[in-house]
Every structure is written in C-alpha cells, then in structure tokens.
Length: 352
Image 1 (cartoon, rainbow, N blue to C red):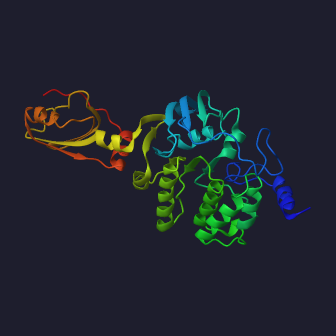
Image 2 (image 1 turned 60 degrees about the vertical axis):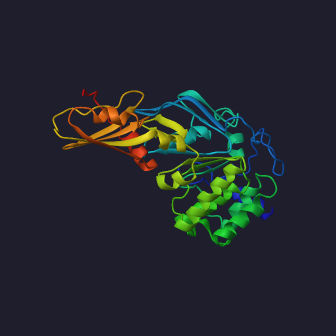
Image 3 (image 1 turned 30 degrees about the horizontal axis):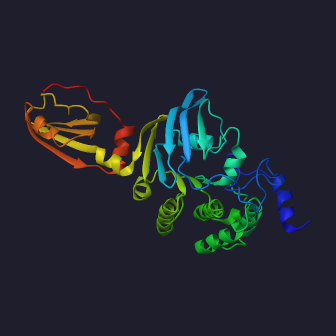
C-alpha cells in the first residue's frame, strides 16, 4: 500500500472535528461519489455564463423554537463579489449550509450553478470552493499531506497550485495541522478552497485570524477573481473590508433579506437627515413618499432620521414646517446603513 492509500485508509477511521463537515475541498476518504468525475477530468458545468451563480426562492428553515430563515429570496450574478451581512444569529450560516447541501430547507428552493443542493450535494461541493470561519481540517495530517490527499479528488494541477499558495503564506509543508495557529489554519483552508480554481467561492468569515497585510491581499484577490468571471459569495462581519471589495450587498436580519442591491446604489439611496427645531414639543415633519424612514432618534431640539430614497428637493418643504430652524443631510457609510437596517425602528407619521 502506498502513502496516499495509507492516508486514505486512516482517514476512513477518523471524523473531521467540529460540526462534522468535511475539510475545505475534501470528500470522504476512500469514496468516489456517484456521478463525480475522477481526478484529472474537469467536471462539466460551472463554466462562465450569463446564468445566475446562485438563486434562492422563498427559502425557509424552521428549527424547534426558532425560524432561522423566513422566506429568503436572492439572486447572485456571475462574475461578482456578493456580500451577505448580518448579525450573529441572523441566519447566514444556515443559508450557506443549505447552499452547500449540508442542510435541507424546510421550504423553498435553491440552485447553485443550476444544481440542486438537495439532490446533487456532492457535485456542488466538488465544483465550488468553501471556507468556514472555523475550518474542519484533519489535524493529524501535515500541511503537505492534506494537500496531497485532497488533490486526489480534483483535476491535475491542484497540488501544484496548493503548494504555491502555502509557500506564499510561508507555512512549512511538514508541520502538523494540530500545531498551526488559527491564522495559519485559515491560510491552509483558503489554499485548499482555491487550488482547483472554482467558478464559485463561498466564504464564511474568511479573514478571521489573518493578519492585516494578508487580509488585504486576500480581499484584493477576490476582486481579481470576479474580474475573470468567477463569483465570490462572502459572509462577513468586517463591514469596512466588505465595502472595499463587494459589488452587491445583501443584509440578512432575523431570517429575512432586508435589502439586496448593488453597493453603489445602496449607498446613494441612503441619507442621514438632521432636523433642528425651536420647540422640542412640536412634531417633526416626515419626508414625503417615496422616502422611507428606517430609523429615527430624538435628542432635545434635534431630530435625526435615516431615510431611504431621500431627495434634496424635499429639504425646502421640510424647512418650511412649523418650528424647523435647519435641515442638514449627509451620505452614510455601509456600516451605518447596516445598523439602520438591523436596528430598525419605524417612525410614527407626524404632522407639520
């Protein structure tokens, strides 16, 4: 028995830690899934096209005492960096588990490159790259061994690309996975996920544990992948980083998509409006339709509103309202927009 067979045999008797997910890019050892092309053969599908990379329709996920997803609809266009933002518990990881075939939804449908995660989960996992925030890697393998082992499930060129990536990160191939720091484990997982150059890369908090320089280089590489026609689905809490690289933003809150639109369009549609009044007891004017107040706060004689679809032409009308002394507006950052959607407090209609 050669070394690769030894590794495969040992892998059969071990279970990946944490959630039971296979390591990034790794299929169960010793098993060749039905319908999956053998190593060295490029699988069909996931060729650059105009078809959506991801489509979700009315996705619902109900657990006992918890509705993780409550009718999620989204479409991810190919050749883009799509960022999913949400607080802890918003449903981001549940959505990704459905997309990768690890979780069957309670209702609704999902397609990844035209494939159904419920009926074709192994094919999807083979064709995409996926990295979680806590990658499940075989800690008894060395860095080189896990690359060699994983390469047996992919076309030729995987191992060479993996080794080049590991060398760039400066991680010795003979070091055991169990002896790696969190940041080094993240780099190994990223290298495994990218070595077969997938058309779709799904990342769940991918920069967790990376130092600032590596994080910046990695995020910039995502822009390059999108420019080459590949798609990146990015779930992250690092809003400032997402703002630098994302083409489209979706905000998930309490299991629902609150907004999903191109980043520039989203930022241009949001305005912070500050109104000063002479009499704090006088009700504050509300911008007319189509403006929508997402959040409002009052501090003495000052009223502050987060408004979607605010138009500068509305300022004059608001200034003419009773007791109003000034109206100021300013553009908002993505972080401020995210907070407005997740801490949303609908405004009560007010008279003038």
